[in-house]
Image (cartoon, rainbow, N blue to C red; front, top):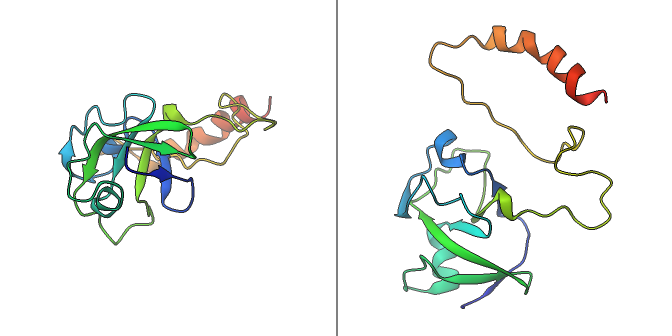
Length: 143
């Protein structure tokens, strides 16, 4: 174990399909499985070097907040600079735990702390999808 990670700017959680939606290639690891398991992380090359030097980090462990072991399952190739997603470490969303005392759960549709992205099929109508939002919101957010 080389280091300790504290949750701060540059640390994000992402669903297991993150690399299906966004085209961030990996230089090491398997894009299909890298975020499948809890406590899995993908590092940028800079973060990999910070925590592990020149050693291959795949399979290595770092601690999150001095207590949660995180296994490195991937290393990004250089990430694009023309993106609003800025990160050094991407952790599998299944790692996330609701902080003690929060008045909501992950099943709550009213917790809006997470960004959601949709990947539409080629030729799909954005306008047609947008017409479905009012009913979706009514069905899920008003209860």
